[in-house]
Length: 235
Image (cartoon, rainbow, N blue to C red; front, side, top):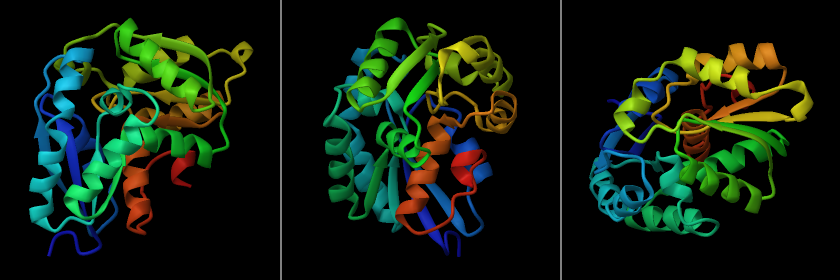
């Protein structure tokens, strides 16, 4: 039987080409993944807002597979309306699926708190408008965003075409010793990042958290299974 340790239900944007691959490489033995998709082509405020309306129906369909936890795997989609929207989203998904739920934005906050990180260098593929919303969200949560670098990409398929090497270089171009950052956040579940985490931590000497890494780590914590994610978060 697949998922004899845990079954993770994952709600993803329809144009996301990264989550299943990164989660699949990182899950522990005996953990299975089951996905449902919400319509999204461009990473804009308007499309993200519309996409969120379909999240609950995705969770309801995933519940048919007897999942043990549901993860909303979209960073900006779970922080779009600021503090409070993230927990409301988790509660809605949990009530619908009848299991624990995590949303990427809250998973990231939990990850940084577990690492005792406060001063963040943030790297994203997003446009300036979404970067501003993300910075405000992190600021409201008590984090100090000391650097923020976005690529300005709107098409989600364009984000999905980025490589881990792109994430590595973008972080190295952003983070400097003078920033005083005590951790790095690479945002977006469609940005391939997992292979870049440990090289970045080795070269920078500080923890690196990414959207997929934090979401999977948090989902598995909910069901008592050790997360096989790279980096200090997985230690």
